[in-house]
Image (cartoon, rainbow, N blue to C red; front, side):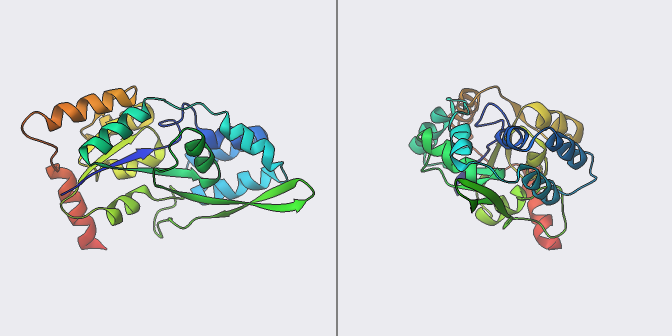
Length: 241
């Protein structure tokens, strides 16, 4: 049995949604309309990204890189990484964002060693000093358009039947995997969703809260265990696929 901790990126490790900020800054206010259409269910997540990339058009990669590197993170993520390393827990970042900025931000904040899954963005040179975005979505779900990078599928594929799955998140893309995680830490939209769907969760404000809760659970004599409802949901999902 292993303890697998899956952590959202935008708004969880970073203080803000870097993807939305990037598209708004480099693509203009029309990107807000595109995101609104996605959240209203009028377009898929993939279509949302493609339309936003089209709005960005040609941009300076150096300007984008500097923008990414300037984005602040919740520094308490380092406490979770150290805690997990000492306990032998595995930490993986799951993001419905773009590797273009995850790589930059993780690297500049001494987190380059943390594995992550995300959508793929390549800067394709289009003229002297400029580039456009070429997007790829290797982790979509064939039947669900709500996320471009399906965190639930990745989580299920990466984990064994005996693993204890911990999810730390806050947004729309974390709602699907929340039902399949044994231990959920939630804030913002994910917290509201868990309350509405009767999914057990622990509220948190920083990763210090996550560490304190996990430490208390592991030292209580009971240890970290699989949740009955989450385990049954995982088993049912495997039976229906």
